[in-house]
Length: 291
Image (cartoon, rainbow, N blue to C red; front, side, top):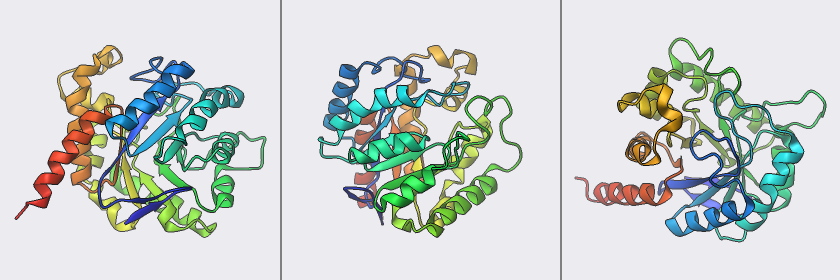
């Protein structure tokens, strides 16, 4: 299986590690650490040295309660970083839901659009949608994520009921609609959206039942890194997660990434690239000798 993107055909036989580059002052875990241009550029370089297979650059936080960022500000944050990242020899993903930003980064050579809104967002003013931009490109990869409500309200009123059938139906429908617009199946990746409008129990239900997504035939991405649900099951209260030391998040995050891969994820989106790459090498060595 492979994931077709603008410049790369990504072989998914081996789990792919997507390294997070947050060019933001307010992301939930590392907000501000790489907000400056120089820091973000250096972080891209370091993640590639650490073994990142893909870089995922984001200029707007989508943490619970985050406010929408103006298009011009998001462009000012991400364009210089994308311009550098596309020279590093790995696929470059941009985490955005705005069509104007999608078009701008694709024009610079970005490979993947990673959209928490699954190309559904509209500002009500412009007729062009994210679906139009991705469809017109003809080659870029796209990741469609499930999000309940929006970043402002998703954790105020999370989902109810059995979560996997709802997520599965949503992702199958959105991916099918996109294919109906001429986007090849190989270009599409799906993400169950851990933490985006789900309870702790629902997040772990998605992990335990994640293999149900695989028969749809799309690449599957899992984003567990440093999520509050990990804090909730490791003895840390949700109230203190904002100040939780990064070292306390490391082991649970790497563990969740390994479990996601064992349950069918092809791509894991992580902050701690070096440690995740090392853990996946151990898993791979074991799997090669199984039985």
